[in-house]
Image 1 (tube, rainbow, N blue to C red):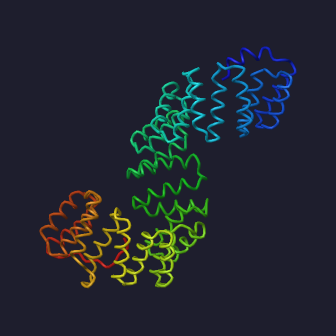
Image 2 (image 1 turned 90 degrees about the vertical axis):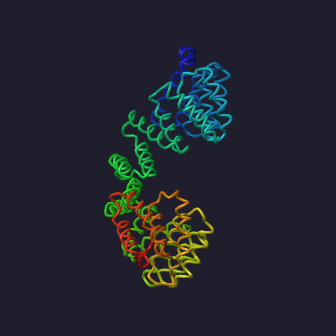
Image 3 (image 1 turned 135 degrees about the vertical axis):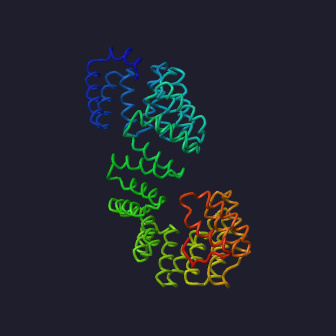
Length: 452
């Protein structure tokens, strides 16, 4: 670092300046930036045109976050030694920290032109390109830095992160793995791989990554919340609950954990405990509509209908589609079915890409025991929408369509469709097989209202 200047100038440093410079270096090592600046300033007074001394003070200012003062010193260094790349790099860092990314790119480019084989310069220019929104150029710089220095942890990390942001998940997984080879205890790499596996519905692998991260940092609450999400997706409710509880022991206000534990309680019909967590959530984040939606759900099941409706109204003010959906649950739970369907239909109209909401309408219209509530034509209509939105890949939605066809007496179509569902579901087809058996015997599926 700064080799040209050091070789050319340090041997000529005046004795008093050298002594003050040494004290400044000691202060830098201790992290005493103000003291370091004072010693370097004393040295500069003794030897005002010594670029090393000016650079050292600029570096101390940089570490102290005094970007403007640091830039002034690096400007002077560049005047004294215009062919050295390092002061351009450091001045570029100042510009970057001041959010002046265009100026930073110019300085990093000057540094690269003078010393193209320095990986730091390419990585830094990539960071500024990324801040400007040019992810393609940023990725090119990170890859260039890695080509120069395959062990550059900053560039390895930045490349992996930007691949994830570009939705190139498989490449991001490989990139994080490469970083882990260079630094096996890199916690962010483990966590990000966990998130990528979770997004790909590979929850066992996600759990393995989060577990490794927890072993490295057992006191970080969010790591337990991350792992709990994947346990929950796998239906491992006991393990998920243990992680939510551990997370909340470490961080009682963690909203991810409050959300997760509250819904686990609620779906296990432990409505008082679920309500307590949802109320805690609204105390922590009063502007989060979903917390009021959870409250409305628990209150409805507890028979506190008016309070449930009031909670849903609060969610409607914050997020109308979600709030309408919550209010529809309250009304259906309290057996005001048509009013509930009306709210859910309006919610779907406001959010027409939400296949789950279309499926909810279809399922209830197809299977509820009360013939006054069922509506085969409407059930088929919304089930077809849900299937279309998910390209017929969601077996639960296809199962709903088969149930709607059966309710309409279209047995052959229902059987044929349900056979495909059972075949695709494999080992997890017990409930689907039960429905198929019903349809084969010209019996429709009937279910009391269950929360979906």
